[in-house]
Image (tube, rainbow, N blue to C red; front, side, top):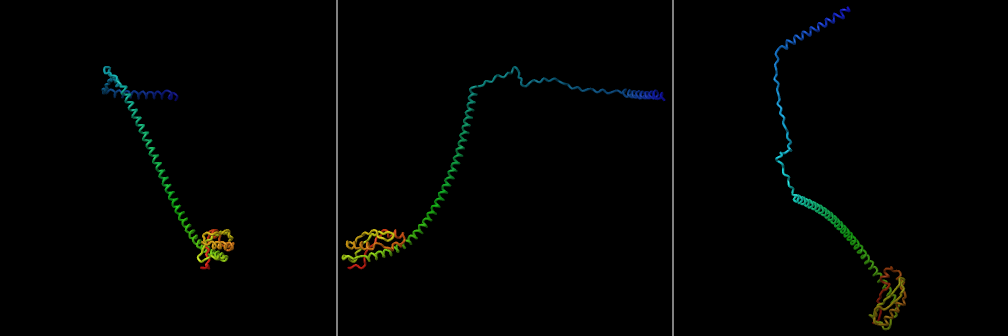
Length: 254
C-alpha cells in the first residue's frame, strides 16, 4: 500500500503529463508548417523643417532710423495742452453759468413767493382795515344818532332851564325909567354845579346904560338857581357853566 502511494501513482501521473505535452507539440508543428504571408510594412517620410523667427529681418534690409521732429512734437503737445485747458475753462464757465442760473431762478422764486405773501398780507390788512372802518363808521353813526338824540334832549331841557332862569331874573328886575319896548341886552353868566352865580357881565349892550345895569343888578339879586344842581353834569358843562342869556322883559312901555 505504501509502495502504491509513493511510487506507482506519481509515475502514472508523470507519464500522463508527458503524453499530453508530446501531443500538443505534435499538433502545433503540423499547423506551423503552412507558409505564412509576409505583410509589407508602411513607412512615413519625415523631413526636418527649420522654423525661422518672423521678427528677424535680412541683414541686407536694415530699416533706417526714423527722424523725430522735436519742435513739431513739442508744438503739437502745446496745442493739445491749450485745447485741454480751453475745454477745462469752458467746462468751468458752463458750470458757473448753470449754478448762477440756478441761483437766479431760486432767488426769483423766493422773491415771487415773498411778493405773493406780501400781497396776500396787504390784502388781508386792507380787508381788516375796511372791516374796522365799517365798524367804526357804524359805531360813529350810532354815537352820532345817540348824540343827536341826546343833544335834542339837552337842547329841550336846557331851553326849559334857561326860561326858568330868565323868569327868576325878571322877578328880581327893577325897571329903570328909561326902559322902553324893544330894548334887549345879552348877559354872560358864570355858574357852578350847585347853581350859584359866580360872575355876570354884559355881553351885548342894549344901548341904554341904565337898562344894562338894571339887568346885572337883577341877576346878582337872584344869587343862585337851586334847580341847576338837579340837571345832569354833562348838560351843565355844555350849557350852563358859561352861558349867554338874552334879557328882554315883555312888559316894557312903548
